[in-house]
Image 1 (cartoon, rainbow, N blue to C red):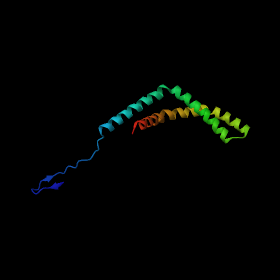
Image 2: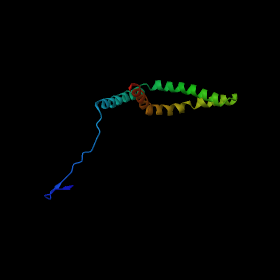
Image 3: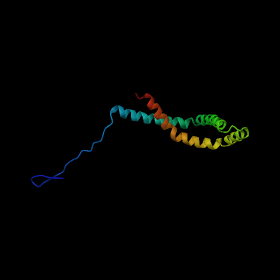
Length: 116
């Protein structure tokens, strides 16, 4: 507070600087939110499709990894059996991860494609 010559107290107002988003940035943020909601709905609605994609990727990836790491034939066959048995548990964890993380990843990817 400042004291004036007459003994009156004058308060000083300090304006806090709050940057405002430009109209284009606001539109981009709003549209990003809309795309995120749409992708989340897509993941929920097409859960069976995502399960099939995960199964295909798991099958190909596990066989490739086992063939690369285990060249000894009996051990290779045993590891493929273990991979088949662990598929259900992997799918459960993968679906949880996909539902939680993929909408944000897909949205960021799509927004990145339209930025110049």
